[in-house]
Length: 165
Image (cartoon, rainbow, N blue to C red):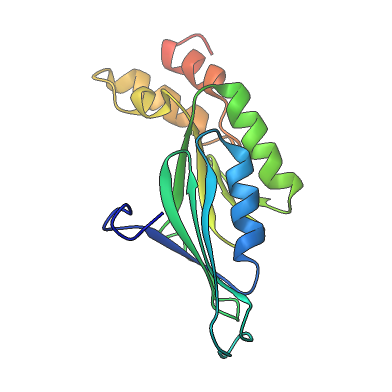
């Protein structure tokens, strides 16, 4: 991907030294994903040597990212998270399980931290509609159900929304 093909704004994710490994993991999760470019450092830098991978440009489900090997781990913050809308509950389960099996830590309400410390929200398609419909009572039921979950379960949220749970 050339600079003229890239969006003007991209997410840059900081890694200690394993941006390429993370990018390979992320791009294996969803269709429409790929490694676009790996740039090696032309010289030594505080966290690495000349020839080490410095930057990895990659696309996940059509969204461009930059992975930067900064040489040291920097704590992440929940102020910025990666919000992944999954097509159905099976995809939520598959992606969630892949993160956890790779060392991710579940948090609550669809949030997890991957093994590199980046925060993700793994959300089933339709979830946001359940929380923002004109029916305030149904929204409240779906929200109450969601608040009991770690990994989101759309069928249970929908049942609560419909008043069936």
